[in-house]
Image (tube, rainbow, N blue to C red; front, side, top):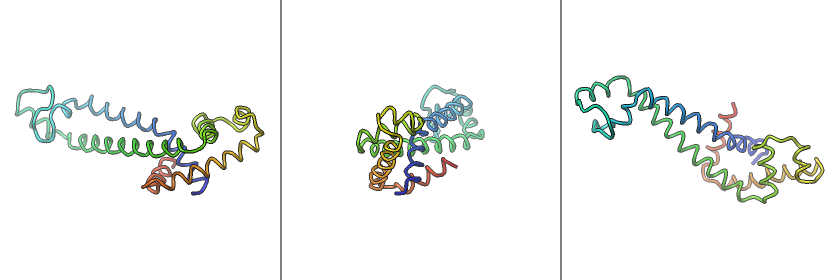
Length: 161
């Protein structure tokens, strides 16, 4: 796997918590705007505290909440995909050498520059960059073993755009 692809996937991985928070906020906003969506399910049966008036429940269901329900389903699906992507990428990062793992954490998670990283590793800047290339190679090898890596790659590139 090419360096730039691995790098894009790592950046995507470190942005997943931010994306998850964004989706959860949108989910909460919809829940606050339409609190009855969680109380009355699509089957019309009450699933929590809601009005006991059956006619009101039917009216509530018909009030444009179809779009909100659809969006909540889309958000739920997106959160599941993010969770699985994060799990797969984290597993691959965990499988590489600890030195490479730290380097990836500092470079991408901490957004540190090469001088800071080389000082932390107590090596020259050129050695830190060499280890970075090796880390990307090793991580790329691990990522190649993941089922669905091409889909993760597409999502990572889309998130970058």
